[in-house]
Length: 580
Image (cartoon, rainbow, N blue to C red):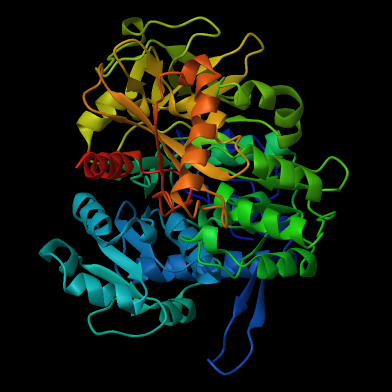
């Protein structure tokens, strides 16, 4: 197998014969992990994906071994450099989640190219804003993307290096198929250091404009080590990832990726039958999905008495996982030691903490129902978490922050090897999000919460969603969990109307499917029941306004983060109409 070679003395390279547990410090380029696994288990399947040969034929299944994935990504990387790409260039990868997506990601990394990943679900306006900000050197994209960018701004139209995936267009440096045919299978890999840039990944934009997060190779290596160690993930396992980035982690961990038949930007609309069929057919041992994904799959399983004895672990992230989802998954994950884990983190800092559903239900759920927030577990071994006094101003040094004791709610900050250092081309955003502390730094998560005496972190909501009245501070997650207990309510959102310090707290409730009140009397009855819940808890006694919404606006990446800014505008309009 090819080695990553010709690295300077200050860098580290991969030993392809090293075991998967080799510390991250021994790897330079994150793609070297794929090469290592290809050397150890070349014939094991790396990717299993459904493909449609033509519209009138049934889907077929394509299998790619680790040796084939490594060799194909080598060919692509070599051909990219042959055709004019250069290490350090920024290339946008705009390809649907597929075997080609995984191959091309590792090819770009092997070539030393900075991969730019933008969630297509964030909307056309945000996508163009992100592209204008990053000013890419080119695109590796499907034909439709190239056609759209040609009609966009000059900076995108004139990007000099472009590859077409799935077809041919004029002015391209080549096509995906041409790269595969012309590249060398034993490409050695471009020399990189662990601190060299690897990717720019944009945040979802659910709380403000999307920002590009700069990832280094060492940060990706640290993430792989942390996730694999914490959850006991072994090479040879089989994963079905409902979010494309987890397919990349799998290849670096020696885990088979089963690409699900779903639209990753619409996890709330996933077809449970297709997911369950894939879990059984390919003997999947692990699956990742947003809370919306597992809500849909879990409900189907309970309704049809389906259990998942072969699934060792389910993972869910992107937002707080409702208790009803935890309860359903705990009932259907029947294998020895199987559990649903809910890692906490952000694009800028992942992972930070984790907890299992069974621990939540037995130890912390009762406190959450009473308004204590959501327990997101203990920090990963390599990560440090602190709570500081909440402030809107930048904190240049750790000495400027005031650390809070256990039990006191404040701003959550994290430090560790997987925590990113900066946003791309946004120095002011970086200044506001990072706190220098000697030879390390802390990332301000933008969340509020507290540590309990056992060292567990409790999440109370986004800092931007705190509601302040004249006499009380209300935290979104703490308040919403009280109202979410009502059997007719699917989810709720706390919004504040007016200026901070004198805001009117409003709860917007989305009833369960089939439970929307049909008459004014039913509406009033449900409202009074929710107000009774509010009156029974100190955190929510000031809530005197309840509104009903058929479907709360959520982010496109995970379909779970509620857009409270848009919801506050909607609530203000509703109340104004009622007054008139």
